[in-house]
Length: 406
Image (tube, rainbow, N blue to C red; front, side, top):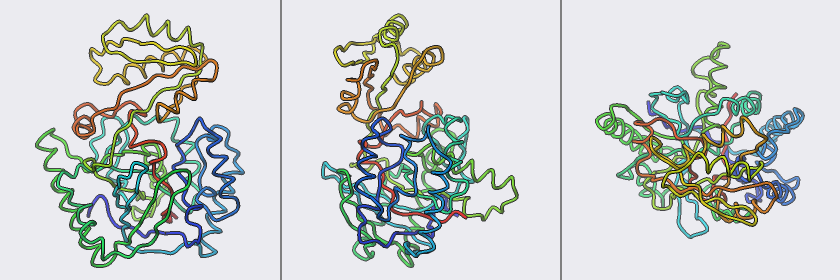
């Protein structure tokens, strides 16, 4: 069986899809005003906003909020808000603000083929280090949930465009399930149903890709791989941890929680750009900068900015493949000994705005090369957390599809 496969997918039946579709919960973590604006726009209309918990509020979660989310899931299921499309994929086309179209396939991943532990040789790989402390809050949301709503974006290394190319060839024959403008400058999204004979064609394309990529990387790196998590590493890890808990409690390996719904893209898609994720640090700025300057006397320039000043830290990258790997270690060491908050910011413009707050400093990081991603993971292991972003914050996945996991 394929690692990535068709699923029983739920799509909302609503006259206001633009109010249903909300951006990934791990975006705008330092901008609560964004989420307040979303809340005001959605109001009481049926929306995925009522089924998720934005991470901007994750540290202050009231258990009653989780109960309300789970109750809303059950109510939506009971009242027939969803249309069910069994054993299907959905082919998506996301028109970004720059006019480019990012293609994707919504289906499900077999969590038996995924392991986020360091040193994993599973066919599905994490791309960033999984922070164990970040899993329990997410599991708490998932453990009593009737539905999963994915913001996970998976990557294939499909050099011949076998899978998305198959969807492109069938595109005019596929029924359109939805097509609308996304809220908050998210661009436009269109989803087409891949079912029946079209699903069979896509199954065959997925099988061809998975066979080819496993063979290719086995010869190149001595290990096999099929997919890597682009966005949503910790959400995927939480889904795996939840499934492991169910198995230990006696659940069969056919339990629906064995699988995780995700959108699959192609690393080589022209629309896919790896954006850096910058660091915003709230601390004694002068002391932190003095500490970093004393530790770094190399030749790689890393720019920092505050409300009134800017400067450069010169990193010594000897033994470190990425500038971020060294910076993150030093920031973590600082945070362990000093009052400090570290946040992860998409976009230089956003960082410029956030450093206007007293006691904050931003570090501007470079992007990584996407065409080396799979080989880097196999050769060097997972990347530091929040190393890259697949596009800008407003280009992240919006919640539309869902799947029952009970």
